[in-house]
Every structure is written in structure tokens, then in C-alpha cells.
Length: 78
Image (cartoon, rainbow, N blue to C red; front, side, top):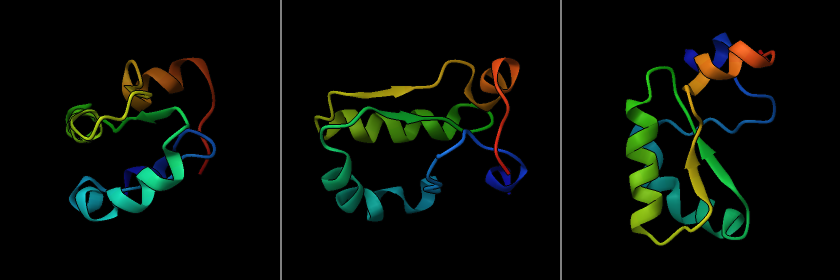
């Protein structure tokens, strides 16, 4: 529901409940790319970031302020 309300343009929605299952395929696609995680409150994004970092992903980060931080400086996509 949060994704439908507004998201960073071009963002891919991966619910944290599905993250572990979808991680392997995503990691292959994004191995050399910057990956930025975010959510509404930051809790789920922090969990996803921990999984990425534990797997050795060197270019993973957490969007400062999550979606609220983004909305303060740029429009979202619906």
C-alpha cells in the first residue's frame, strides 16, 4: 500500500517479507549497482540493508529520512 501511495521514481517494490526469497535474483541483477533501500518508517529498510550487508553487498545504503525525506526534496511517482 505504501508503494502505491508514492515511491521514488524507478523504485522496485520488494516487500521485506519476500526479501529473503527474492534476494538471490535481485543480487545477481544488482551486484555492481548502487542499491538504496527505504520504507515509510525505516524499520523494514534497516532489515533489508542488514541482509544485503551480511551477504557482502558493498554498495547498499539506506535512504536518509526514508520516503518522507525524499518527499521533502523531490516528487514521488504513483
